[in-house]
Image (tube, rainbow, N blue to C red; front, side, top):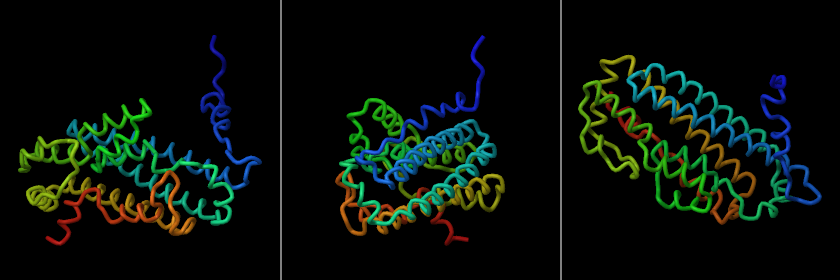
Length: 262
């Protein structure tokens, strides 16, 4: 008979609590907070990918209403991610500097799961794929995301099946290329807002997600700027300067473009 499943065994608590190892020696007090926050981020990224993949499955199987539940859950997670920045911002620049040198070239820029999320949302570049060539598992996951349809591809294919005119060039596009705005897609979205309340709810949920994702990006930029100012980021990135370049770039530009047409 198998051993009793306890809380600790089910959640692998012993293994989980053994994953926080400070590089500073003797350990700097605030390095533990830095490690815990970023490990928790990676767990949330895993869950966001899990939920958005299920959302895409619902779109592909013509059950978009079921996917609304996944989007609502992801929105709550995004709020949690923003809240975690409030905790991280309790660390002063001096406290971060006390262990920053021990990070060496480690950087959030190297988060493979966040790159997976970007690829799923359409922000694909070969450069960001090739950065992970040295890690077979990460490279395989990212390659799959790079070659697969995005969430927006799943959505416009759904509305095409619902009878809306979507150009073949978009339905059969090169999936490794980023999205661009489409007047034809925008016309279809206008028709949805006017005549299809159920799909309109999905459109508004996608806008909610887009806004929440952009809010997290903005708060992340401000946290980095608050902590290191104009210094170079770890891992050779330009720090806050690079992160600022990612701001105000909507995930679903067509859904934003139609706002001026009502």
